[in-house]
Amino acid sequence: MTFERINPPALGTPRGFSHAVLTDRRRTVYLAGQTALDASGTIVGEGVVEQFEQALGNLLYALDAAGGTPADLATVTIYTVDMDDYLAHSREIGAVWRRLVGTEYPAMAGIGVVRLWDATALVEIQGVATLD
Image (cartoon, rainbow, N blue to C red; front, top):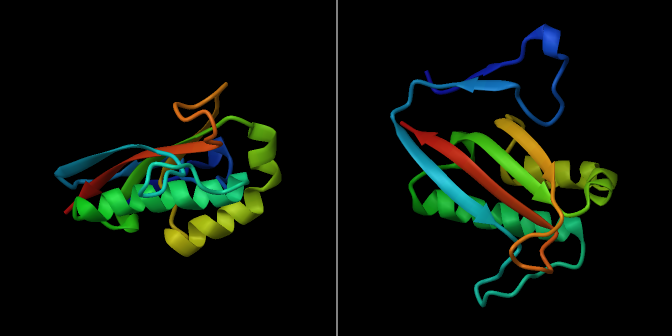
């Protein structure tokens, strides 16, 4: 088994996430929160979509360095400083997700926060992956 995505009907149909993910894999990778930092340590991207793409790319780069792929993500948490802006751009953000990760979704949470470590960061993404 790799992943079994569990979406009980009583919880409603998930869009852009799975309610639960079950795996029998043994190795776990804990991925630190990633913002839209470039290699020089500067936040890049004017808007939430651009920053989401950079942050997700950074997360996937760290996952790749640990030997994983986007398909190995079991859970992802997205922190945003402006939930209304994030939701207004959800279609574009979803397109970025599908292009970089695919159409299978991990268990996910989106959390609105007052600010992130980097004051100019609009989003931060952290995750957990399990590897065969």
